[in-house]
Image: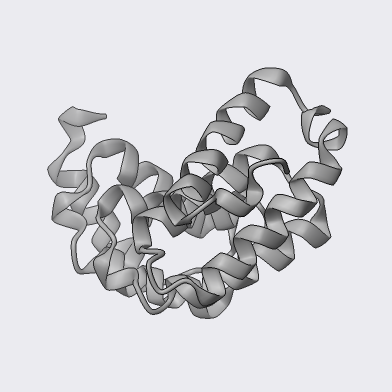
Length: 169
């Protein structure tokens, strides 16, 4: 919190990414031990995501991915992911394969199955599945299944893409 006022969109993205790695290696109680600081960071990030015109798809995807890895408490996660979803929906066309897979994974992992976001993610992913690697295909398929978002068009396209890359799995 000492440096929070100096964080811009790039710092926030890097911070969430680093915290996601830290929480994963530290174990499940890490987020509970740091709940107060994380709540402040959620508030700062949500404010930046909703008001900062400079925050792009890459930063939003990194924040969502890091937040999902941390395993924030339900209220913090819902507040942040709702804000990220609103910002992301306008920028999905700018996402690359990794960002689309990471956003899908993050929202499914955090148990925040935003139907409108997943519908738009499906269309964005479907339009560029030829650029997805094996891990991105697998993560996207898992995310949509885990989120309970059954999208026949996307699953058919994923099946075709996987079939073309069977040797990569």
